Image 1: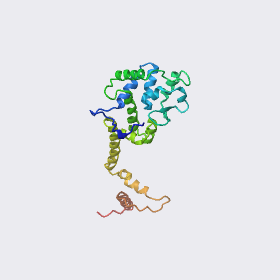
Image 2 (image 1 turned 30 degrees about the vertical axis):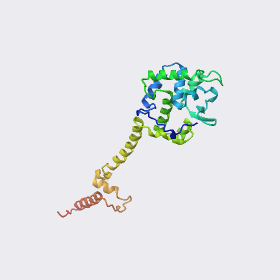
Image 3 (image 1 turned 90 degrees about the vertical axis):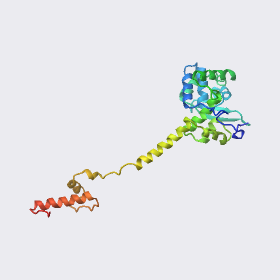
Image 4 (image 1 turned 90 degrees about the horizontal axis):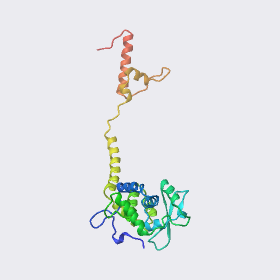
Length: 256
């Protein structure tokens, strides 16, 4: 039966400690997986990049790996009826699974669930990850939080994780710490852009720095047409200056 929020499940334990891997822990775990053998590395990457349960991962076969679209078709557990979900995976993981394949219908990892759990637990210890999040379920919850922090839509996260109802996916909205700070920083950046625009000094006209006489000529129509009326005080000054120069050239002097 699908696990719902009505069971009072939270992403924190009774002591307030989170049950999911944050972004830094995910990065450390993937770095540790690169040092492991290909089988353990590929299993860890599938758990990190798809958010599937460890039993769902162990049931995967090459037949469920679509090379053209770069996706895995995962059979969803904890459901009353058979449900499959299609989850995209990174190119490097897809290439790794090709090398991991034994036979089209044979599992990628023909090992027991407890053995797989111990292998992932060892990688978590090497990554210095300890606490309630240091388990395979912590990787699954970390996937949901990471997808939410990356602006993936709720209905897409629900589909990728195989939740029967969006109410289960909505639990991840309770994420705090660095993940929630990421949301806040995006909000602050948008507010900062508005504030910076409001605080900018009014732009001065370009012709403010131009020569008055040249600016007056700029407002004059070609072929000797009359000058355009302009409400700009600088253009008015230019016209007065031009008239004064013309008067001086004719031998007249303007009044003091």
